[in-house]
Amino acid sequence: MTTQVIVLNGGSSSGKSGIVRCLQEVLPNPWLAFGVDSFVEALPARMRGSEEGITFTADGGVSVGPEFRALDAAWTEGIAAMARAGARIIVDDVFLGGPHSRQRWEKALAGLDVLWVGIRCDSAVAEGREIARGDRVRGMAASQAHVVHEGVRYDLEVDTTHTESLACARTIAAHV
Image (cartoon, rainbow, N blue to C red; front, side):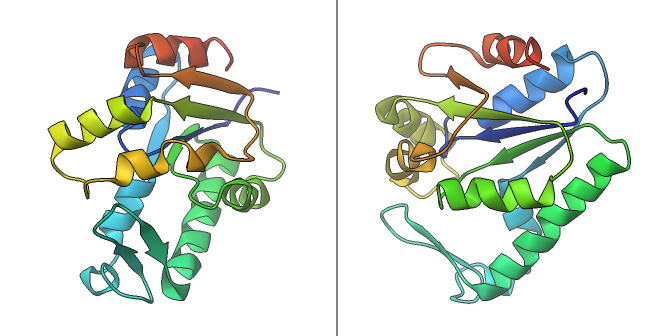
């Protein structure tokens, strides 16, 4: 079977978005990209900073409420439906719930050929990127760098600490 979905998991500022853009260039066919950041941006403004939606703490922590979870379930099912309809999909996510986060994707993507990729990055390097970006709550990169990988199994892992996005994308593309 041919890979239909690539799921990238890594902490904030680990380099996932750059890898996604490079994958879209190096893969021979068109691939659509969907990221958790875009999902969060698509939420109504009233859900950001709400216990029902998503909140970010001053130290970079993230918590989500029941309305967020319900919309997230619809989002994952929608992405799976596009893959089932023939679109090739790259998902950029942050598994704050560890194995549970992967399980929600496994449920939605059941029956599809999925490549699971861990995107690792040294927390100090990710923290430097976070500062340079300026669009993240400080501390998010450091708090997520390791926790998103705890208990999660992958088909492939890449490390962006010293490896550029294009090289990581080529490594991933070789497994598709």
